[in-house]
Length: 324
Image 1 (cartoon, helix red, strand yellow):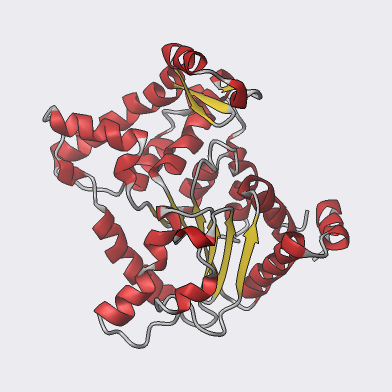
Image 2 (cartoon, rainbow, N blue to C red):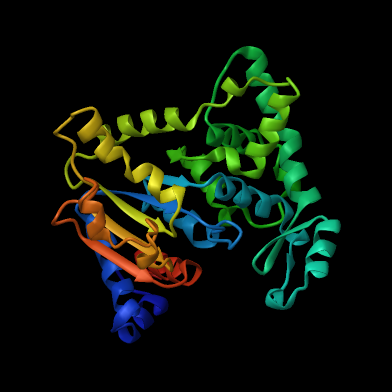
């Protein structure tokens, strides 16, 4: 592959410590795909509000990602940015805000994520109007779908196009919908749309069972993994910690230990971008070798931990993989 200026800069300057691990992990990811392997990317935190879609969408289009696991927040916040980008408010001095300043943001309909405020009316409500119609129609018809499938339906229907405020090529959800990319969303219920769906259940407008559950996601993932883990196998590229990574990585020991399917291969590549502290008992900060004891990774699985800011590291690794 012909390397562009970003990749050339990385290779020349990133020689030690976390920088060197970044290069090693990127080359390992590249080698994994070149050998016919598949890759799961997991999105924790507020990666969609950090606009990771600018690089991740192209990764999806170029088949450098075969499956995504994300939080419910990342599932919806990419679409929120798509339809309400011009109404977001950046707060560079967020560390200086007083409780009264924070309350004033709430009163203005601005929900803050670090230095970025999501506009409630333009973001949440624009999506709510259209997703509610899909939920209601499915409920009436006795149909059931996963959270991301409802989102895909909404994207493909074209109803959001009237609101687009960024180039849709920078939306990873649009790219995923176009590819029909497999997605798993553990704990979707704690997202804004999950809360909204729960409110409709409480009001008896839809049945809770209209939304497929996290257990059903795990069952689906076990089948997907069985079908895709042959040959070089499936790698695991974890951005941040939390349920986006913890949920899907467990599918391997679940099949091996609980189902006693002893032909299930381990995850065949592992990288985590993390700033979590290992010594606090945090699984999100646990070094990869701990995962060997849980039957998730093998002794020989390539393992990398980049202890840094994912909003800086992930786009650089994606740039390397895209040859930029």
